[in-house]
Image 1 (cartoon, helix red, strand yellow):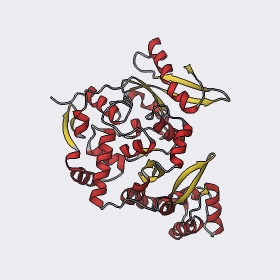
Image 2: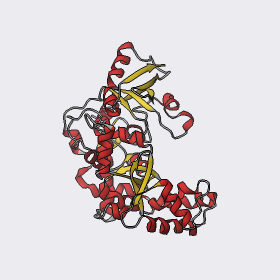
Image 3: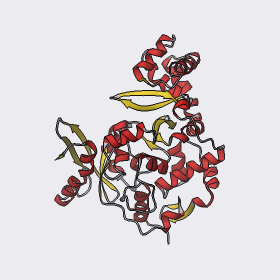
Image 4: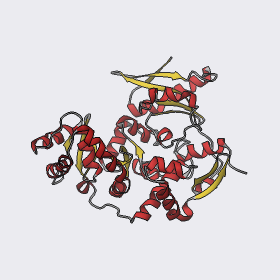
Length: 371
């Protein structure tokens, strides 16, 4: 019989590492293990990216996750869709090379809009390459200063575009913040022993990691997540061989790893408090299994691309939350969705208890205030 929607959702929650650290199969619950499991994790918003890791690592704190990034268990760069992700360091170069061609091609029009000549963009590559040579690590402000001193204009929005462009070319990547400031390093200095698979092998690695970290999924979903064409994604699935299999679901054929089907019957998890920019939302184009389409505007108001943190019960998003950090505590404003029957008193109590790992993560007690 085909997998039901409930079974697909339960399998996805386990693939997303959201059903408990003892769930099998899965990686070692370290920063390096989790990031390698997914292949790439959305990290455009650093705070969300850190807690995306923390929510999958029992007992994690913001400091312990940040320390792991300082140890180079993962790094941030722009591998796909022109957005920042956490990736395994040794895979950063081939990922940027494989998936960066399309964002780079699209950037030419953006530079034209911003009035940035191609020569200026190429000058930024040379200038930052020189400024960061010898293992230097510079803050964003210092990189912009280096560009200006080299005669590369960073007026207006040019600075962000040029810093992105140089990383998208595979020259630089993001190192951990110093305080609240972004820092940049040369990718080749930071990761001197990169993995260098051929194109088909790289596509196969990408396909396997996406399917095992998100499945059951379709090739179309893989293409949306990776920014690659459907044809390339099919090549990747073929290159992965028996590591990826097709199953029938109520929504049609989908891709999974055999191990996910061989494991014990999964549950969809219980009560979760997830960051907004998490693979739970960002890993799929069709989010209807996790979120009623009528509630999408409450998660992404005005379709502005900024995802609010979610309250999730049994794999379904039922509300949003946002934090306000105080001197000695963290205030969370929790807002149930307007649609549906709402949250019972028991639901609210369970969600309040579900914030305990977040309190551990931020190192402060969490007070929940319901709208």
